[in-house]
Length: 198
Image 1 (cartoon, helix red, strand yellow):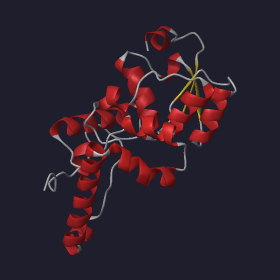
Image 2 (cartoon, rainbow, N blue to C red; image 1 turned 180 degrees about the horizontal axis):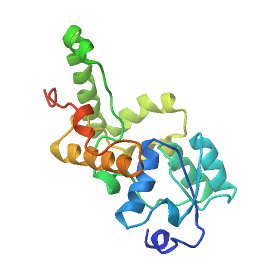
Image 3 (cartoon, helix red, strand yellow; image 1 turned 120 degrees about the horizontal axis):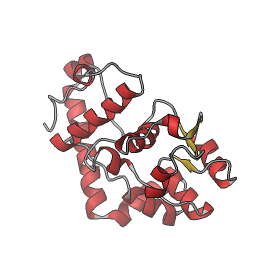
C-alpha cells in the first residue's frame, strides 16, 4: 500500500467500476491517504472481467475486483492484494446489502422475518462449518474450490448491521458525496435500520 500511495503523480494506471463498492474501495483508499483520482491514470471499466484481463495483460497496474474473481486473478496471474473493503470502511460494514420497500415490509412481515433468519443461520453455518459451506457454494460460484476457499474468507457475511457497521456505511456514503454521486448527509434519508437487529 505504501508503494501505491508513493506512486501518486507518477502515472500509475488504476482501473475500477463507477458507482460500485469496488469504486469505493479504490477511492476510499486514496482518500484515506490524501490522494484522489487526479493522482493516478484512471480507467473506468464496464465489468470486472475487463479489469482482470487488463491486469493480466499488463495494461493496468492496479484494479479493484470482487471475490472470488479477485482471488482467481491473484492465484492465476500473480497479482497481489493491496487492501480490501475491511480496511476502507471497517470489518463489520455491509459490503453488499439487501433492500426492500416499506410496503413490502408492511404487507409481508412474516416472510421477510423468515428470510432474515435464513440469512443469519447461513452466516452462523459459514462460521461454524466452513467446509460444508464450500460444498454448497462451490457449484454456485463455479470456480475451483481452492480459489473459493480463500476468496470467501475475505468477505465474511454480516446479516445484522452493528453500530460499527453503520459507521462504515456512513463512511462509504461520505466517499459517494466526495465523488459527487450523493449530496452530503443523504445517508440518513436512505438508511433505515429500525428493523435491525430484530
